[in-house]
Image (tube, rainbow, N blue to C red; front, side, top):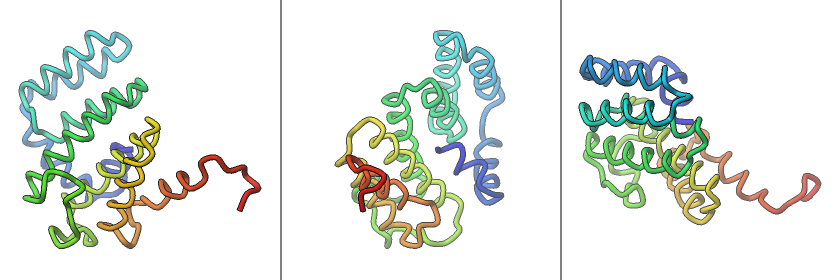
Length: 175
């Protein structure tokens, strides 16, 4: 989810993400590539991810790399931890409250096309999604509702999370 929205959803996110990529030390980038190549060998891949994180601890590229690794390995709790780290990193950059529950629309122009704000919203969506997948439904609903509070036009697509949650326990023919 993070990767799909943040990287592949248009040039705005690509430009913002590319700026973080330029800040990434070459050795950290090398370890991210080595982690990718070692994907099937979890201890080796995780060692490379840990080294990349030690070199560039608050770089979004490293965090997204770790998130993707854990997400595609179906290690959702680990992916959730990385999504939370990413929220903290971006909130610090935006100078908004660190706790997503305390973020209000007045803290930033979330309805605009500012790439860092959109990135934050995509990360919050991923965070909410993971909570729902981990059956932490109340927390997931709160995160999805916060996403819609910050993105009332639903540009990021948070409403789908609440729609799915509202269908839990219902058959396809239920209203």
